[in-house]
Length: 295
Image 1 (tube, rainbow, N blue to C red):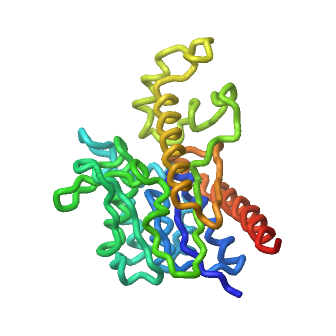
Image 2 (image 1 turned 180 degrees about the vertical axis):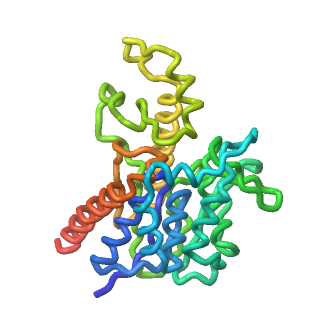
């Protein structure tokens, strides 16, 4: 018997590519996805899935190397961000049509953050690509997306796992995928994390990293983090705390948590590895869920 599910996909930068592997495993296991809600990368993957073009987009993403990822960033001189974000949308539009959300194959919504009015912005109708562009606007990286009198940034700022916005039918299962799960390592080993150490995945972050490299690491444990590491760890902790609170308020039937300390925010050129990580995590979680259902 096919089980219908309402799927919620978290924010997470390139780590959100794991959502692709999860979706593949859910469908392989016989689940039917009837609705999707997502923030940031979760909105991007969920939106692409809702168009029926996930396979084509996955093939394109898996073909990217460092150079081609870097070429997608249209840098600009602006006080509100380093990247316009138009190149990414243009490339996506070559693969998926800019449909209205209400015309998609499955029910879909994307969450962004209205930084001006300090509230959520939930896209449930209108342009799919505009909704995705708003939801993926990482503060300080992408120029915020302006809509009416709103200034929109990444949905993960206020709601990284939007369990409260997915549409559900009476008998559907609520399934959540969190790619911001706590790292499976001790604090003393964090310096080995490629995302937090001397990773040169994109020149976009070299401005910050060059500044942090000018300061020598202290031997004292409390002072071993540089400028970029402090920003990354602080943001990660905030995401995890908001996610924990959201899960407590809206407990899903199936929760797939994926700690990915080997992948960074801009590791899009590691798509195959990240997707496989998501696939393996989903396979394990689905098996455990199925065993519980039998007992």
